[in-house]
Image (cartoon, rainbow, N blue to C red; front, top):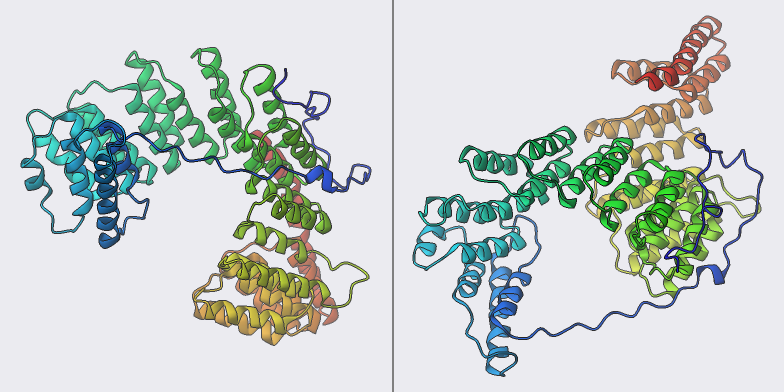
Length: 571
């Protein structure tokens, strides 16, 4: 029985040059309640572990909070105390085997309880009879805490201990911790330290180091590890390939990632798993390459014997959304239901994004309501994506401001759900009012944003300028530019284009010319829209000679744009 219920005919890869939404015949594909229906997700019942020494250690390790580097010492100590209490209670009640808490577990708990900066780690550890396994337990627990400095201190102590030096497992734990935290340089230093001490490296060591490079975006360094491994006679495993694939995916080098993926299968003899496939699908999703994502999903089922999961389909739907392929996104969503693959809030949000990109607000709201019915709570990104549907051209037949009011209601609904708006959510609401030429409401949103402790960025301020521009209020637009400079928010090309648009609306040629020159002075290149606005305001002012000059610059821009695809192809 096929794991995926769509066929190559249903999800066929199209030609290399994708059709645009506008170029295809319009085919209505409304979203129906039946298409969106999903069984409510029932949470799995937690399994109570037996109270053995091994589960005691696991509980202590799992009790460590995943806070940022600025841990709260008081909370940390409380967490450790509660963990010890649970262990002792379980032991007293006779649950599981009656075993004492292992010494290494007690040391680990003690470390968790004493995370103050004054603690002498070396003196504490010298008093304990620690072997390599116990040190690994301590390092693992601290890694779960993300207590980076303490982990390094314990590792440093172990290297001075005659019986614990040069333990590759200890290094693996710390390199993995640093890599996952984006501290690839520190991870690299430890990796090189191992090599300098002639320690025999494990495949796992290369794996965690490749992941560290991937997190840091260093593709070439990650690929060099693959060559180095083979030179040392080690066979790379899925973790190593996964790290390099992740680095290539983050760098948007998805074709190189696919080449490495095939190399792993054909030369390395490794079978793809769902994680590796999803990494590659993530690369296609990032670039909107939905045909390639569809093809890979089919390969997973028909060639690799890998069942696509929720993440797999989420990547495909996101790729379709970015490419404006609403109908293909809906097909993928339906295929998930047919294949009985669970759908989550990420999948629903991706489909909402596809609806918004295609300009189908009603369908987006239908998906949103289906998401609520299925028991999934929308997050900030879900609401922000929905708000973007109101930034498009106002729908005909609706009263002026009706859509903006609906967007404001959605924003309020988000806050009532306990979701705190970020700068992007506020900027999107400002853009909604800008599209409806309601600069007074846009001003209020910016004021509200500042009252919430957020600083408007270039996107938010540019949207506010656009609101002024639609009403021809060029003085207000220029005041926003002054505020941006005062707050050290750097204007971009769109900012200046919006400012020139305000001048065009008001017939302010001199100010438009001044802004255009300022735009050049800060190193920003005008585009077609900018030149069209400049020529328009220039014509209104009757400046024939300067109009000719602008037309010449515009023609030069046309020629550069015509050459650009050739240069990109050659590169």
